Amino acid sequence: MTVKKSASQTAEQPATAETLAQGRDAHRDETAPLVPVTARGEATRRRILDAAEDVFGEMGYYEASISEITRRAGVAQGTFYIYFHTKREIFAEMVGDLGHQLRAATRAAITGAPNRIEVERRGFAAFFAFVAAHRQLYRIVQESERVAPEAAQGYYDAISRGYEQGLREAMAAGEIAPANAEAIAYALMGIGHFLALRWLVWPQGAQADALPDEVLTSALEFITRGLGGPTGE
Amino acid sequence: MTVKKSASQTAEQPATAETLAQGRDAHRDETAPLVPVTARGEATRRRILDAAEDVFGEMGYYEASISEITRRAGVAQGTFYIYFHTKREIFAEMVGDLGHQLRAATRAAITGAPNRIEVERRGFAAFFAFVAAHRQLYRIVQESERVAPEAAQGYYDAISRGYEQGLREAMAAGEIAPANAEAIAYALMGIGHFLALRWLVWPQGAQADALPDEVLTSALEFITRGLGGPTGE
DNA sequence: CAGTAACATGACTGGTACGTCATATTTTAT
DNA sequence: ATAAAATATGACGTACCAGTCATGTTACTG
Image (tube, rainbow over all chains, first blue to last red; front, side, top):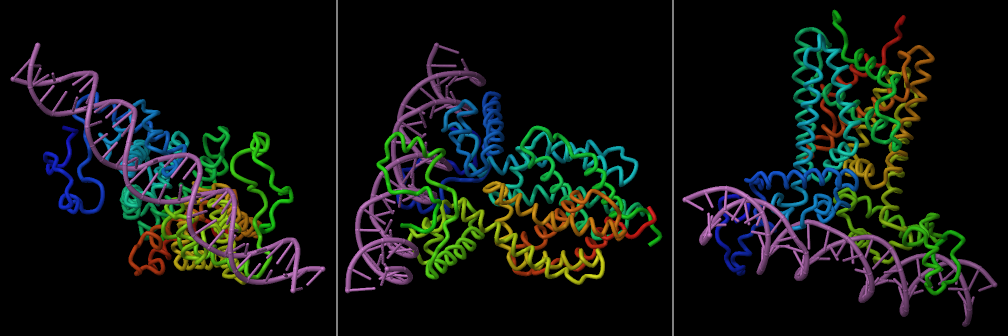
């Protein structure tokens, strides 16, 4: 048969009115992910995912078509549905992957930072570098807000949680002023997001590979003051 | 004829290869806006715009259809194209309108504020109130980033410019620390955007009409410190 | 080497939607 | 009152696309 699916996929029955009625919502199962078993399958799935990143990044979710994705991947249309149930599913998976990569890159960048301010400095630098290197992909996260809200909120929540933990520890250690950690986490994410948008994503020409020094400096000074150094208050 | 268009709309010619070649990109003129002349026309255009706000807000740009818009507006499909060239055009116009309204509301809220910190406090409050009252519409701005980038950038740039001016004056007056005004403006916009997203837009239930006090307080303290009071530095 | 599971193909279906157009109605100008 | 402009109609043309399916091909297993 096909690749690993949910167990309840028995032999085919003729599509009577009854069997159609059983199909709850629409289409098919939409349950367990379609995982390849062979190395060949793995490779094909990978090629489709890579092609999808390009196509979604360039054209956006709705203007991208499965046929364009499979064309770039060098496979037939039907092959797509061996590895993904729907267009939306592959998109959500990409958002998850992206979040994973970004968090890994950030985590690697901040390990060993001597204090909270240095954590911010290195974390923001890593974030901006990541966005600059994946400019197209970053637009995918934005679009996911509409296309796959769960994926988008998962993305931001995962980042936020990591952030909050670090902030709470810094607060407990008296390194920064006490405050609602989630609020500060989202505020910092917002700063990063908008600076990246303005200076990395919007500029069309290839000229902007990084934030202008002045911008980065001003932002970091703002954040440093905002977090509040070790004050008596 | 139709409503006011560009001047170069003469009598119809048979569509020869030549005339088709003249049609540069695709479709029609796509130039001057389609402005109604009569009060009746004005009213119809308004009804279409209002319906479009609902439909785009609820379903998003791509899943919204012209037929759904005209249905809610109570007009025929063809009527739509009397007042708007394309689906994209009405969307962009809505983003422009929204920006206008938001800026007006904010401006009204901050007039008479005694100092820069109070400007921020009132400005953020007005912004959050606006988003809470137009939750659906706010998603339109987000989507415009992909659908009509010029409109999105116009929206943010207009806000930024107003922000920058106020910040520069406050810097000159020594009320806040000197810095790159545009960077600070976008940082503040990012903070507002993300807090609104997390506590006003995402919550499905009607429970959240405003930010939790603790969140708002933490954010404003962060901003206040970040801007830097009148320091000797 | 035969049998079977995994993988691959590409034509096809059903449905939807943007934008157009010939025609009809209402309003304004003379 | 009559002509012309402005506004309104709704069916239609054209196009595209997500997802399906019957039929092939590859590769592993015993």
